[in-house]
Length: 177
Image (cartoon, rainbow, N blue to C red; front, side, top):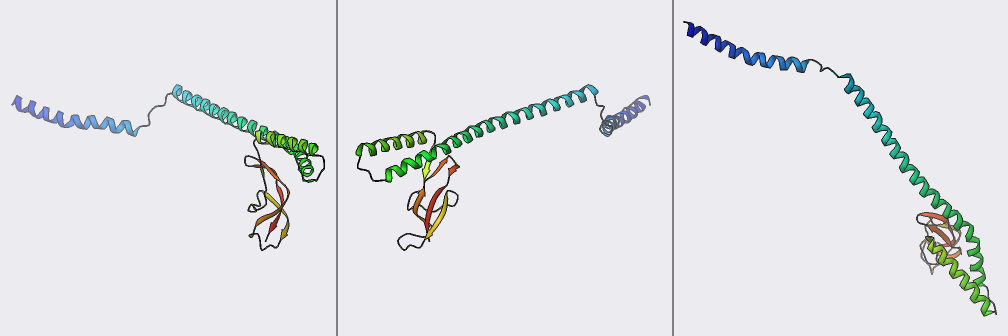
């Protein structure tokens, strides 16, 4: 009989053992885990540090962008101040003159100015026959013409200048309708 009692006890213990093993797990997941105050403080400090680092990175990127923009704006302002010289040289080249040396000197000056402007990244636009673009051209006159297509530049009064995508001066043109 002792053996039977031991066998029954062992069976009961084995049956209860899985229940007792599962019960603490259920209880542990049901309970809220204890939060270590040091870990909480570490996480808060780490979060603050990451936010400051991200803010500094954004500041650095913004200042680089502003610096590049200010350089581009300064260059555009300098080019805009030189445009009256370009216009005067262009008018001088259009005038008839008997002095060939004078005309040659004006041509050389104009070529050098165009070379400098090109070196600065300035693009000159606004040619007769180009399609009219309101983002680049300022139409001051319209003309009815059978020879030219619609919305084509018929005459250029002032050339346009741009640096990259920034228009320094719009081309002043006459457009065919």
